[in-house]
Each structure stands twice: as C-alpha cells, then as structure tokens.
Length: 368
Image 1 (spheres, one colour):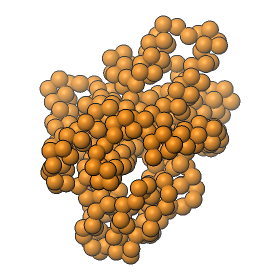
Image 2: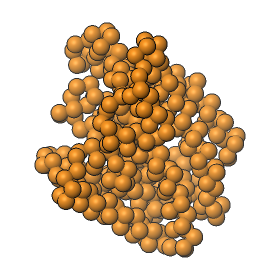
Image 3: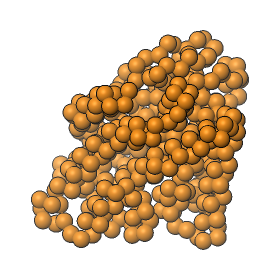
Image 4: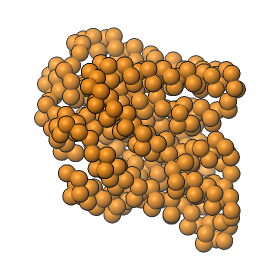
C-alpha cells in the first residue's frame, strides 16, 4: 500500500485513493500475532490468544470490504475474477509452502500415515476447522506446527461467500445504512445460532470456537465497520473529546468484560459479540486518531515491521516453538519465546522477500 495524505487534526479522513494506507493497521496486526504467539509459548491461561485470532478475523473483514467498497465506488462493479486472483496470490503461496515444509519431516522420517494424509488433505482443501470439529486433532503431528490452519479455513470460506453478498447489496441499491443493517442482522443471527448450539444441543467448545458459521460475525463486524462508518472513507462522527472520554473507555471496558467473565457458556456465545462491538470502536479510534498516545505505539517501526510479516509469522510460529522446545530442549518460557520469535521472524522475512513480494508484484501486473 502506498501512503495516503495524513489525516487532519480532528480525524477527518482523506479522499479515498486507489491504494489505501490505513494508520495503525500493521501495528494491530502485530499486536494480534503477539497475543497468539505469547499464548502458544505456554501462557494461554493468562494471555488471551483467542482474542488475537478474533482481531485477525475483524481485520480481514474490515480490510477486504474496504477494498471491495473502493473498487465498486471507483469502477461501478466488483470483478470476482480479480478479487479471487488477488486473494489467491496473497494467501496461497505462503500457505502451501509452509504446509509442504511442515509435513516434510514425517515424510522423510517414514512416520507419515493414513491419519496424517487425511489431516493434510483437509488443510490443503481449506476445511481444517470442519475436520477438527469432526475428528479432533487426530492426524495432526504436533511438530508440523499447523494447528493455526483452522482459522485460515474460516477466512477462505469468507472470501468465497462474502463477495456475492456484497455485490447483491450494491445491486439492490441499498444505502450504506441499510447494508450495515443487513450485516448487523447476520451478526445477531450468528449469536443466536451459538446460543442454540450451546444451550439446546450442548455443543462442544470446538464447534462454536472453530465453526465457520459460528465465527461468521467475528469477520462480519469488520465488514460492518467498512460499510457503515469507515474511518478512512467516511466523514467522522463524534468529536475527539467524545471518543477519548466515552467511546474508547466503553470499548476497553467491554473488551475486558469479555475476557474476565469466565463462564464457559458465556465464553462460547456472547463473548465474540462483545469483542466485535468493542473492536468497532477501538479500530475506528486507532485508525482515526493514530497520533493519540494510546495508539501512537501501534505505528512504531518495530510493530509495523512485525505487522508486515504477520501472515507468515502466524503460519510458522508453532513450528518454531516446536523446534526450540522439543529439539533444542529450551525449558525457560522466556528464553523459548525469544528464540522462537527470532526464528519465526527470520523465516518469515525470507518468505516475505522470496515469496510474498514477488507474488505482490505479479498481483499488481495482473490486476491493477
């Protein structure tokens, strides 16, 4: 993305350029990854790694819908061929590269079996979440480090379905408010479905946590922000004072409540809705007011660097943790985390330079 004109002091957005620069976005990506990474280091009881995954979902919904909206408003249509080509060149090359490397060890060691083959096929076909819900983690060797692929499957399902919904909303000539209302109803329907699964069918945690239908709203809340009151495309609402003293504290309190209320039924039903509502406010404020001290650090160079690498970091970090813990036998959580993070960054930088950047250049030549 190329830089856009800076926002004005009151948070007014610039006019929409062809390529958007969104303040704080890379920092939010980095923070989301770090939450997941630290939890996977062995601190999942105190660090909400799942919140990082939910933030990634929200980011995907917001960013993809923002790009679709700008394309429609610039050209009067959405090219599905170009949309899926952009997504494929962005997502699939690192996805399949890491997947191939992850299963190289059991293949070379002669320990690859039928269960491994079924798990690998599920991952390759982007139905990892469906496979885990049906079979648990049977067939997933721990050292492959591919446990995060379930969340990528949910995003792939979104990429397949949502463009049709967005095009339908635009062709029906619904206003932005009406489009946002449709998405809000879908978010409410996802919550209602989780309530039915938990309270009527006593569904297990993996069903509600990993189901594409049950996590739909985590992505749609981001799409709702992109359509309803986009901080980089629409005129700002509310003064800086209202955001600083009312809306941001309310969002933080809501987010904390979603983490501190520990009841299992609550955590698998209302938690995701509260987090989506909190993110609507927090993402808006972080993008609209990146110069505020509470958000300025999101635009610091180290976090921006991690944010640029965040997709590959997400793909490789579990494998790096396995190497440090099980092959190098590092016992200290702190030392294990630092070494695994350094290894993850090194591998991700190589993937970024050798795979992601060439694919991005190809994407620009084919699509732009």
